[in-house]
Image 1 (tube, rainbow, N blue to C red):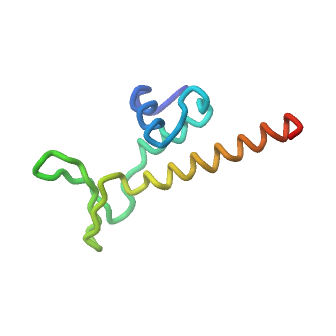
Image 2 (tube, helix red, strand yellow; image 1 turned 120 degrees about the horizontal axis):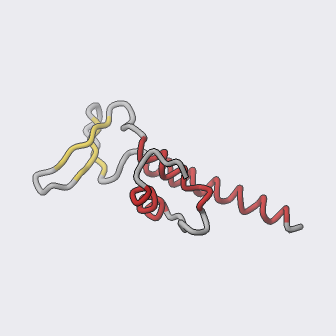
Length: 94
């Protein structure tokens, strides 16, 4: 596939995003890109005393248990999946 990240990591993150890694193989690039995405401006990754990773926004004080871009990449996957499904239906005469 030519991923920039380890295949196991890409597959694990793809499943986290809601992908069926077998059926959505052509969309795995989304998971690979997401794994390489830096924190958006103002966000930084931190670790709490219990060893749990979280993300902190320095200007607002907001914290998130997941990467600030997870939602973006999940939505991108859903949009790309929906577009691909529409194309397949049109090609099949539906």
